[in-house]
Image (cartoon, rainbow, N blue to C red):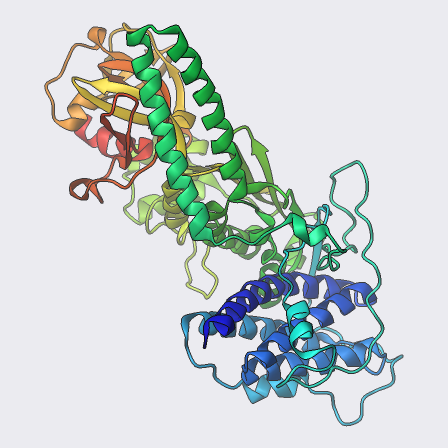
Length: 604
């Protein structure tokens, strides 16, 4: 493709992927409320838009899929034929296929023709029943409802692919595509409910694709290449380092005019840093939008009745974090339905509603965002986890006996742990949970678990708003500086925290009658030990456990720009990154969880 065509194709991929991500959720809502004509028209328009762009760019395979779905949806719009369970299943399969085709186009892979079986499933029978005939019952006793928080419509991008096609070809058809049958225009979207942010009724559907921006509104937005934003982040990071350097030098020079200049620079840098970070923010709803379809597919496969409730979809995170959270959240939501929610008969026998509820919510808490996956299912039995861990040799009997019920729940994150006796396509709780935890830790976040037998399970993920700049507590060991993520720091103890004691060969520190493991950073690094009275202890949080880290000195708080580790340290446990601090020295950013895992072994 030439330059113009390549740019158009890139824009098409961006918009088409956004539409496909919304279509799965919209189809779930339409399946639950088949009389919602606004939702039906929105879905039809989504497929029509993709078909138009695919036809213009000469992707006939994609056009065939969209055209087949259009015909089936248009029959429902005109009243000729209602959508039955087979039509909903086939349309969801078409959405999956379109997503795969878009990925193939992005990577330059030649598209293959759509399966005839899918096209056949979308085609209307020769003799369609009257419009008044009821829709066929689903083949399995599945009910998947979706309740979402209704928020204000997002601002439409200034680039409109359909408008571009219209300008290139006029208001007629698009080459390579079949004109769509005339249909009533979509009704105006309902305005968001004022006041309370509580989820709307189950029968409501997510906000449809926003209407075309009126004249002048499109001038308020602009699409920027992500690489340019990344370059700006790097430049702001260098500016932050320079500011920190000046703030370190300022006390030695004792110049009043310099003080004023550095103070002004500090304020401007902080504002610029905040502005650039906001430019990279995206709502977590970009990830949440895929879960209604996921919930529907898993529930149908397991013959369960599930209601997915989505809240806080407009909470914003750094775009890199939004993308990185996708896989862990998919695993948690799928497992909540697979092993959290009981079968309908089991729920009724336990006095519960036949339909289970999985709640996916997000909210900002200071400089972090909390994402919660909660189900009202059977819960997790700590004793079952204890026995399973012993049976698999992951923990010895003596160690298992000392675990509290809360600590038993943490066993679920051990590699290779599972309570499921049979392997299935849907992994059970524990299969891959170590990977989920590792992925969250790579994002400088944490995952916690709470469960009550018979009432359900709750996973809470906490991640920073951004990964580019990290608030840290700087500590010193001889002449070297180390950085601890500030979010993991509970408190800094006095210079003489008391005498340690030893339990089972592990040094412990009695902190307000609560013994905590005591780790020496000197011992961990292989340096000569120093008396605890000459050191300072920092209390750190690792999951549900706290421990004390002994260091020579605590230097203070400082925001650092995260850099990749030197090659010699990459892959070593206990290190999370590197940075330059205010005095120009390199500081290694320590992995709080890795310190605990490896430090316990060294202390024994």
